Length: 253
Image 1: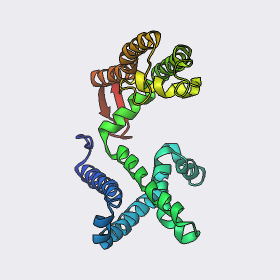
Image 2: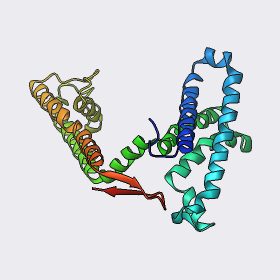
Image 3: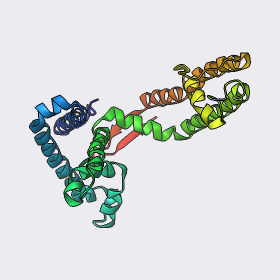
Image 4: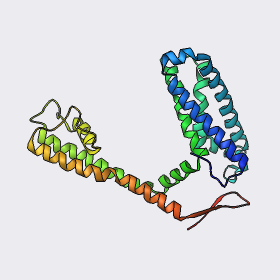
């Protein structure tokens, strides 16, 4: 993951440093679950979290203060309020919010732990500093209708396969295929071709149907991937330039 090479050097350095800090925060959350390691380096984790919270809080305040420079949020009051409810602003807020909440309100320790693991959301901040992830986000946005259609097809196949395996196996294996909702487990793991686990058909009809569903699943599960790849190919065929005046991207197809 890297910033766009066309960005000014100070901006690229800033993006690299922030991306590194975000990844280190995610690594810190992972390592904190290793109890012996966490207790051995408790003060390091604690002061690193304090340092990160200070940086992320300053970043959030500065972005909220300077967002009026963007024509879309130019109004000093309503512009800032609208920005606060944008995707990245919510991510920035949730990145620091769990740290301060226990100091304001007394919670059960179990809830505090849940709030602390909300720090994982900081990994979403890296999208702002990565040109590649921004491109991926634009592709998802552009292809959302095609992806929605693909997911509806997958959902349809999951439900229908659950129904047919219920018809084929419910009388022979009443403890495993008692209802269509219970058959959803079999349907999902069969369509994703990861194996049957502890639920598998024993009748001839059920085995034949399972083989058909597994083959269909290979092709259908690849459908969203094909849609996303076509979006990447389209992006590569387009030339993008930055306007020297407004700094917005101009796309030439």
